[in-house]
Length: 553
View 1 (spheres, rainbow, N blue to C red):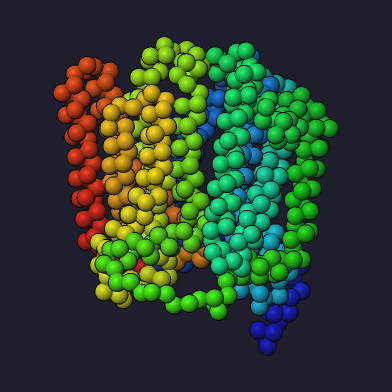
View 2 (tube, rainbow, N blue to C red):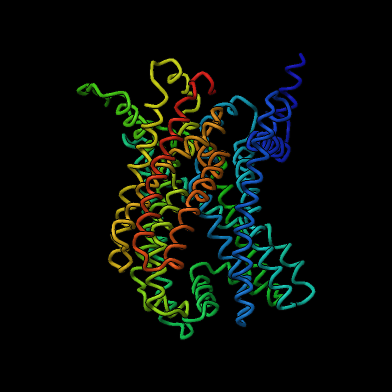
């Protein structure tokens, strides 16, 4: 009788009450609060604290650079561009971070199976899921808009209503880019649904979109550089880039005009446009929630499967191919790492296309000095990118609930970990070689060192990712988006990998600028760095191999 009363009460619950309840449950699951509050594992709270500190560090770095850009705009007399700059950066960051995860999170099939038996309205489910995305991106938007607005407030001293207007319009900032990312991400997922190689379609479309964005950014920078007579001044270049960005994203201009000039009409247009697009999306997707989810979880027909020729491989090679298939089967996993390597190649190509003369003019340094700086810096820049795109940072956690297979099979950890590290090398090496080729075309080759350092350093970076992931594993995830994008091991591994590059960079810069023209000192330092990288990566790999499968999970 009590169960029936609860069911009736649940069924009679209104739309808003259902949405609030789902939001509360989802927040606790996303943040891991349920496990911390009700669980007995004290390591959960420690992991959450570590994740918070890591994100605070990364957030502090982002805020510093944004505030510096706003300060530069105000210093060069372009303070009126600060608000548009903040809106453009906010919209771009939200779109990029939401594009890969919006579709899988909104139409999560596993979560849908748990919710279908309950008396819930589909609109409540999709609104609650969208709110989780919205809350996360609102935090990013606040971290971008508020520091830049504070710099503008201190340096330009606008009217008394500036701060109030900024705070009132802040909740509308994420709506438009988040909705666009959700629609586009869902379409990318739907494009591959039902196909035999359904995972390849989202990956190809995602990488194609990334290349278009990068190409558009370069085209925009060249256009700005040709049109702006003050290209030698960073402030003038940034102001021109903001003006060009407004043409691609007009809502940023509406927001800037409303906040800076305290004009009501642009603010109303900005708010109505942002909220209206979101309302249309909810109204269109809510009633069709179940149908969209069903389309996205379609699998290729089992009747197409045919047993092929079976090959006998060594265990490490079999694990390598298994891990390679696992990697490319997840478009979230691929896109989250492969985009970094695409950006690495794109940055070197952009520097090569720009040329030493134009870079020297922009930085107001002699051309020979620019060539020298780039020759010394490019190997370490490639290593930093490799640390950001490392595939091993979550390669242990990605096993998830299938970990029992490794625990039950007679497979040694060193063979599994070697396969995971080789996948990272397989992904990274082609992009590193192409980047080195682009650097050679730009005249920044430093002999074999330019290619040797980033290639050799991939080995210890791969080992660092495995080691950190073993210390901070997460096997109880329900969505690949959670483990690939929200694991604590991800930012810790990226930070550890980036920091490990610094001593080598410091030693090489010291030899280049303090002990210049000393060939033997240069050879000794660079050779020692390569040997230490190989030894360090091997020792760390051997340390990881001592872990027992039974100790995981």
